[in-house]
Amino acid sequence: MYSDHNVRMNEIILPSPQGPVLLRASIHYQLLPEDLVSQSIERGEGSLADSGALLIDTGEFTGRAPQDRFIVRDDCTRDVHWNHFNQPIDPGVYERLYSKILLYLEGKELWVRDAWVGAREKYRLPIRVLNENACCNLFAYNMFLRPQTSELPSFQPAWHLIQVPHFFADPAADGVPRRNFVIINFSARTILVGGTQYTGEMKKAVFTIMNYLLPVRHRILTMHGAANRGPAGDTAIFFGLSGTGKTTLSADDRRELIGDDEHGWDADCIFNLEGGCYAKTIRLDAKQEPHIYRAIRFGSLVENVPFRSGTNVPDYASARITENTRASYPIDYIGNAVVPSVGKTPSHIFFLTADAFGVIPPLSRLDPAQAMYYFLSGYTARIAGTEAGVVAPKPTFSACFGAPFLPLHPYAYAELLGEKLKGGDISAWMVNTGWTGGKYGSGSRIPLEHTRAMIRAVLHGDLENVPFRLHEVFRTMVPRSVPGVPDQILLPEDTWDIREKYFETAHELANYFCRNFEQYARNTGRTVRQAGPVTR
Image (cartoon, rainbow, N blue to C red; front, side):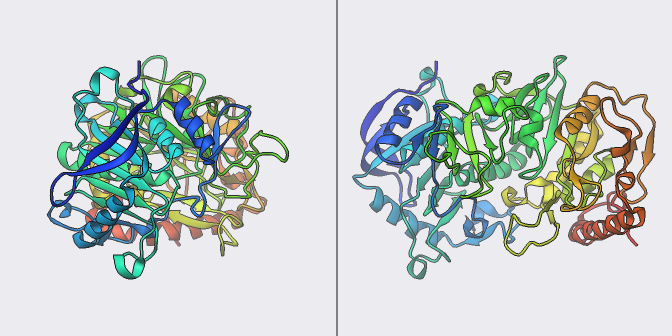
């Protein structure tokens, strides 16, 4: 039984630089989804869909604003790799904003939730989440691990997450560039999210602190990736940026889901950091993604999906509000989820890329040095029409497939991955979930059923006796045949009308890879530096 019950309180103690402070407010504590949904509708925060899911519009922000996320620079953040994602901010800026937020919250109606982060008990982090809106507290219920009733009396939060979407900073007075902000303070162990109701900011801010604490304290590799488990207990990890298929490919009828996005990998196992899933829903199809479709029911929170005209049926095909439509739901809404979300050391890792250049093979095997190279590269591609100014495929490199959430230097995570690959019998694969037969606009998207068949062939050991061929540009090993997949799509150069154009485009992308990797050359050994594609 979960701990959630409708408890009303009139005050709560919060941390501050000067010591504990008492906040007087009308507080709802540990509400069940039925209460949160009911209150959200009463307050005009959302509407109920035909499936029972709560649909909300997140307003001005329909995605994260990484340019407005900051980390307080002090003695606790000496290991932070400062860059355009990890932007330093003075402790005084945090203190002024925090004081203003406390005054703003005085006497207001608030929703408070105690939760865990990390499915492995020895590493789990207790957090307390304060929300200004009931719908955002439903997101916290779905996404973080829900304590048992017996755990509440002794629950002591190590971190506080305060999300106030209707509080706006004054840039001229408060020391931040815009009125919205996310500030992470490791000394105060507090996260402030202001001026935005996009709930993904909460999730990724918590992921960021775990990406700092677990590697530094415990030598745990934290990963932006999904994971599932086979009937024999074997596990697989799927790394990938948004839109590459992590959630879709990890939700498999033949395997159990460990988690769809954020995990840790210690000496013995992998474990989910979350208690729920946050799936993209743009063009969601019940036949192609049945697990996700069925999970969107009462208790789920759906963001920025409009209704079909005159109905309460979500229009998942619509990008009228944003392409980044999302649904959050507890992980046990997936029928074959593993609870608790822990699995063995993985047997296989997959790097997913939606290659809009149409040149990366649909499936290729990597040696350990190549795994390090492509992990540090973190490649996918943006396509024309999805972003202002993008008129042709645009390569995107995000270190370790999660650069915006990595407070340490990317090589710290790559080094941990290298240690894992040396210590076990783990195979690494690159999977192109993007285009073949030409670039986006002239080629076609690799069918999902073919991608699923390739991954299943790896997981079932069906490729152990299959001959492989060295790809002459990317130097990865490409299988000559895969059960259930036409042979002709395995070698991408054979799918293009003009082979010379294929190799010209492949070398174009290879040059992007090499230029991007220059920033890591000083930290990597010769074997890894030379593991990338061939350039002209």
